[in-house]
Image (cartoon, rainbow, N blue to C red):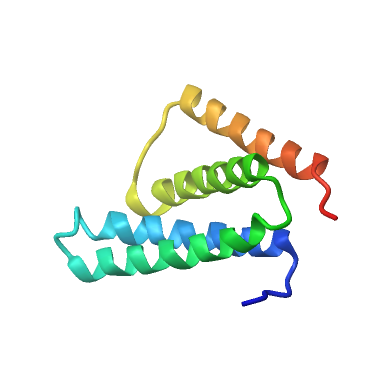
Length: 112
C-alpha cells in the first residue's frame, strides 16, 4: 500500500500512536487488564507499519532517534501529568537534551 503523505507527518503520527500505546501498556497493569494490553499491541503494530513507510524516505538512524526521542519526551510529560510520576532536575535536564537532539536532527535532515 502506498501512503501519499509526508514522511515527517507519518513519523509525527507514528510517535503519537506509540505514545498512546505506551499509555495503554501502563494502564494494563502488567496485562492484568488484558484489553488495555491488547490495545497497546494494536497501537504498536500500527505505529511500526507507519514507521516502515517513513523508512522509505528518511534514514533509519535519524528515524529511530527522532521517533524514540520524541516519544521519550512526550511520555515523560504524560507520566508527570496523568500518572503523578516525578523526575529530578538532572533527569529532566537529560530528557531536555534528548529533545534538543531530536530538534537538531529534524532541522538538519532533508528528504528528497
